[in-house]
Image (cartoon, rainbow, N blue to C red; front, side):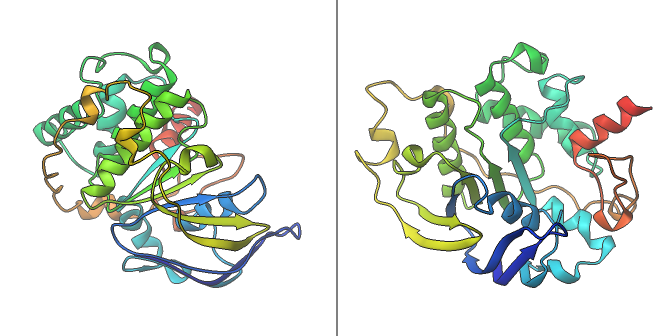
Length: 291
């Protein structure tokens, strides 16, 4: 599924973010990537998202060789993954339903297919009663669940989560981790970058430790206090955590005109090039605000 082979990433200012790391993640694995600030976690994610390319070595995700990824293939590559960020990155001008639906519209989905899928996902994350709420009307945990639903909108093979529990309380963090575990049990590969060591220790999952740009440990941690559902401090699990997840119906093939890369408005002070492919939804919001 994911292969890093002797990957080194050095930035123009001389910073060596990653140094000859080799890592293989199988389809269907759940992997925590942990490390202190400056350990190389952000660069690791940028390479996965194809926001950066290695200085040396190679990165392969599924059928895509990222070092030589063609411009016209970047949108299809990004479509196979869902991304969840610490700061949520919801579209502030859209309600909960539209935030999730927008992720489907940008790849060409329409009508009833969107409605069925969004309704299902919001039920899955326990937000079926919040569909018309705006992001500023939600708690931090609710906003993060919207972000998870959006990440799942296009039925990705891979979920990448960047510090998803950084802005929410410990109990909600536990609930969200349990949800990621359930998604993984349904076959989705999950790669979660975090510095929440105490939370990681509660799960018997593979843990990769980055330190100074190198992998210093790679293995499993035995769950403490039993499996996750047995260590909730006597609290009942939320209803959305006990539902059975039905099979996710696949989307139709993306129309060819949605696969063509195109330049978009500046993001973070620079012009996104055609080679970088389609923008993420939160980048489109900045485009609209700039007009």
